[in-house]
Image 1 (tube, rainbow, N blue to C red):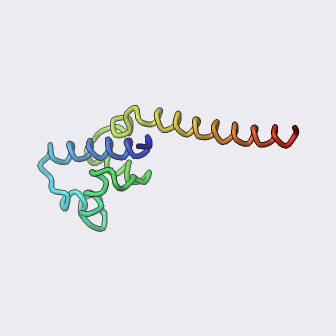
Image 2: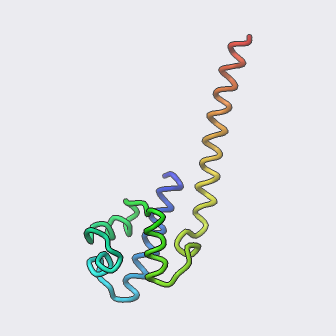
Image 3: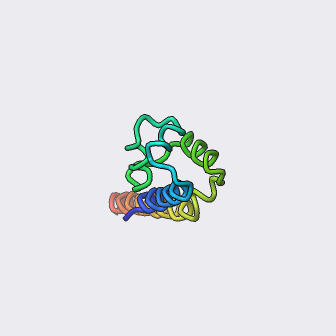
Length: 102
């Protein structure tokens, strides 16, 4: 599983806990945050939909939590995974160039 998938799943779980702690339905939360349907909230909570930046603001403001709370430590994992992918691509290109020179 990619770090971004874990990120969305863990953040969605936090949002679900926040929503349930206030006794709010997905439908009511969708209306409050001006999402088109409750399905959007369901997808976010299950990690099947990534949040847009404006959605981070809406959710953090609504629940009065920081971005950091929603994001957690997952950003570091995503950055590391991206760097590893970039390094692997660079190494592949370098190996191809070295073969051409031989």
